[in-house]
Structures are given as structure tokens and as C-alpha cells.
View (cartoon, rainbow, N blue to C red):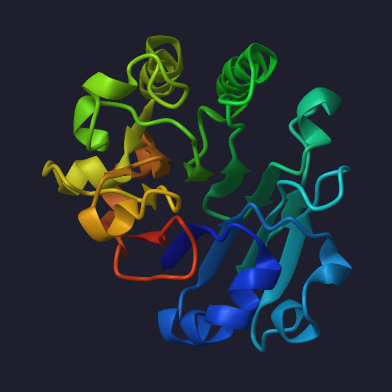
Length: 251
């Protein structure tokens, strides 16, 4: 089973660029996207009705903001857009799909760079979500999306310069440690320990051409599903967003 995750930075722009051609070429079983900036009816019809796939989305209450969506050629037993907290549910950051053998979360974690208030919101989101996961300790769980944080120095090109910037602050990175301690592994690092592997590059500084990036998009997999993990990859050559797609082959 191939699962792909991609922060597309707006559905309208990427639709005009490459989305449907990329989707067809990818030939994934499940495609998860973040930062759609659209409600369901703002997705073009041919995106909502891809043959062979069921489509689900979770828009933010605020127009043109946040949002996640999933296409799946495997019918889930249940789909929810809630983690039982209105403070977090209202921003369109969550899609949970319950399948027979596993649970999949597509999450667009908050960005903490705008203000101290948003940084606190981000930390609170992490803490609440990690606590929320405890109820699934006997399930196989996959959590994909844009985490808006680089975990270790190897995960960004310039760690020393960013220690005081949101996305690499110690208190943000500590939440990754909590996720690991809760029984999850970073799927990409399970296979690849090399530096220079990033998933986001700043548009304004043309950082992608120089590979001055951050790895802030992840698949975390519960330890009881590690034996089912076949591969994990970063598709850094795929353009269309300031992020690139990531994927796992599992089960």
C-alpha cells in the first residue's frame, strides 16, 4: 500500500500547475494533502471525483485558510474531522480515517511563527494530540502531514541560525521527543540517516535551487506497525509547491 502526503500550499494554484497529472502518475492508494485553503465545493469537480477514489476534506471555518483532504481507493470504516477539541477542530487541520487494519491521521500542524499566541497554540496542539493518541495504543497508527517543525539538526540546512526561530525551537522539538516516547517512529529516518533531505524550501530566497531547506513533513508510524513498513521516501524533484511530497509503502 502506497500512501503519499503533500502540503500543496493552496488547491487552486496547484490544480492549474500539475495536480491531476501528478496524481495519476503517483498511482497511490491514499493521497493526503495539507493547506488546501478551500472548502469541498471549491475543489474542482474533476479533483473531487477522481475515478476509483473516495474523497474527504476538512476545511477551516476561516475562508481561504488551512484545510486538509484525502483521496483513498480503500474504503475506510469511519472518517472524522475531529480530535474532540473545538479549539483545534475549527481550523481544518485534522482528518482521521479508520481502516480495518490501521488508523490514518492526516494532520496540518500549526505554524508558530506569527506571534507568541500562535506559538502557544502550536505547542498546545502538539500536547493535546499526543495525549489524544493514547486511546489508540493497541492499534496500528500512521500520522502524516506537515508538522511545521524540524526534529534534529540534520533535518534543516542551517540549524545554528534557527535555534530561536519557530520550527526549530527546543520546546517544539521536545514535542517530537514526546511523540517518539509515546511509541512512534519517524518512517523516513528508519531507512535513511543521511543529511540534505528536506521537504520545504523558502520561496522568497529561492532556497530550493540551493537545497537550503527544512524537513518538516513526516510520516510517524506506531511501533507495532514498523514490521509492515517497506519504504519511505521524499520526492524532492516534484515541483508545484514550496513543499514536496513524501510517501511510505506499508502493509
